[in-house]
Length: 349
Image 1 (cartoon, rainbow, N blue to C red):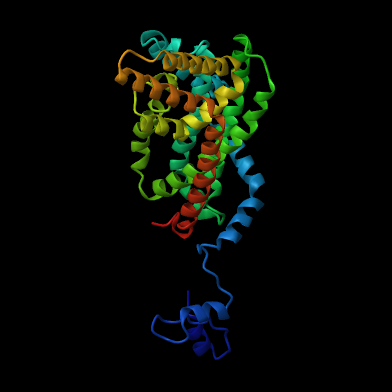
Image 2 (cartoon, rainbow, N blue to C red):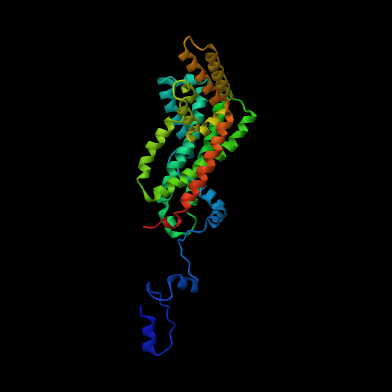
């Protein structure tokens, strides 16, 4: 293609020329040149307030994008969307065989199967959200490089996919609850705020791992080991309160505040009247041991400490709610801020 200035010189006519871009050491500066011609940086990070408004404007897209991915996830499987329910159920079956039968943990509570299934379903929601969130940016590079949109819509959408998966599993959980004579009570309504808080927490963690995973692809290889360890320390297959007389107080406090167990514990207390009764029985049992004391001073002190520790952990439902709200708010705020700080870097390289 001929240069426009050459065409003007050879043809003798007046030809419009393309404005020459400024040089790095010339005048005017790049910023002034961009402002004069109305140019904007395509990958600039918008202010936090504007970024939030952009995300809110795309809320319908986030839900539609998540729904499309949820449907497409199992299109090549013969059982299709049934895997949304089968996957957590099969996980629960495996854990029941190992922990319930082989290791004898089914005696921790009076109705172990609904106890276990509730734990698996709700922890699975967090586990899958973190795993998919870590890959959300890296697996969407073609979309990022083709379109301009808030990159946070990707971790949001992937977490909504897992929420929709949980909705499908909740139908099976309801049947299991009724099958074990766990009848609906007003506490069941608490599942709504529990799910909202867990969703906020999951989105916050997903935003953090999404940014890390965008620049460190090896994170997806490490996450399964981290999440599996988290699962075993969250009291999903056993009641952590049975350990209160065997571990130090600070360890029990950490287990109680663990976000992996906080939302699961609230869900169990909300859905299972038998589990609430089990907790009262545990408290009464330790109260008897505390009253009985022992024959030596050491036994008296040990029994008193165990009674006090166990009673405090079981009877204070409000502390678990405080943990749930705290984790949700902190994780969401920190995750959103952390992800937004690298907005202009996603898709480069």
